[in-house]
Image (cartoon, rainbow, N blue to C red; front, top):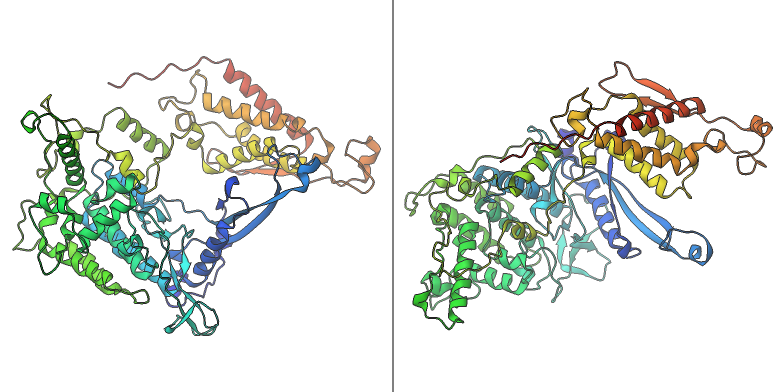
Length: 632
């Protein structure tokens, strides 16, 4: 009911979503950017959008905090270093459990980078377009539209909702009436009449480049002031990338050749000519004006990759002293079938021509963009030179997000070559296998490898995850908190460190360890005599975390301080005037029928320490597990 109400009244939030959050996300400044104010703008934008946009579209804004910390490198607060303070800022927001759209695409189509037409239309028409449209109604432009900035809210097949994130480059394009940058020629009609009159911000004659070269609009490359049209322009580039698997300028974007990206986009938009490219296509610009080359956006990654190989080999041959007869140029793959569908080309042409004609203050025709994307789900036009229906062979997205174990297994399979090339390229009849059989053929390095293509979106491949990520998230957080406390034992109060330590220790002491789920070797079962390396390592880390606080022998861990009582290590008589702290930990786990409440007193502390040391000794005396058999 709350979700339905929010569609009609964005300001009405009957419940406080902040109270539902138990695990949050924090975006913190790096040490190199301390006191830079980088997050100030992003925080204000997120807070404003969260107040005015539907809750299902924007992460919950919790808080924006700034903390004063010593600027000394070793963390010491003594001496002259303590007088120099620095401010570290952090945005506290909702943690989105799902994967972003970039990793969703990469997980599903890492071999050919393509999505099914229905999935690409859904992600762009039903997800990104409504998000951008709602942001624009709030007077904000995103300025960095790309798949990685849309994140799923869940991991199950039924949860296909996304929220827009990363407002570091976002900016309001409207200002109050009294602002000196207000353009009185272009008034703004806000959703709410409260708060006075607003106007468009004056267009700057020369603006800086903002965004990602892969998806930035042509006007942004031309250093025109960023407007709503550029967000939608970037959306159309994202759609072409998702549906075809690549864009003509992706090699230039991967190597950050922004000028080359601009030239290619101008040629496709019909605003300039590329003589070499047009010679290759066998066409010339008509005298009355240059034609558009929108079909290039649908030819696919294999075509663009093979064409790059061909062009590079051709250039190498031109600079070589050997005769052309001694060389064999690599073949160029056939473009995707959809690039010859006149209906699809016309749909894209309508969208890009409309966007190119917009001025700074003009509003995009969102309905026209939606109709253009919908057109891709129609059957091919009968008058198209369509030579196959292989575009429909792409499977639909599996919306069940894999576990970390499944992700690591998939990476290992790709690394070991278990994902065969014939399962990807040769499965499409319209793609030529690019194999150099002739020893005299010109060898050229392919700059469009899969890792380079991923880098084109400024999204590096995730590093290999440690075994700690196999643990439940709440246990990961407890372990991280104990490690943090041990590193900062001089500043963390001992009673708080005891509380955090007990939350981890009682879990390791009382809850059975699931070796099959948490150990590296997946074939281990309960009751085996092999050493459980992950369990032993976490036990050791937990005990080291307690040793940093002298295993909590200080009486301040169990008693409140009183006036006139210094240090907490006085005689026994002084304890009579000190109030005892109440420390307890509740254990909840599927292996335990009822939640167990563990007291945090000295007796229970000694018991838990003994259990941890005993379990660690048992694990260290066990035989190491043999390595798994080689998979051939």
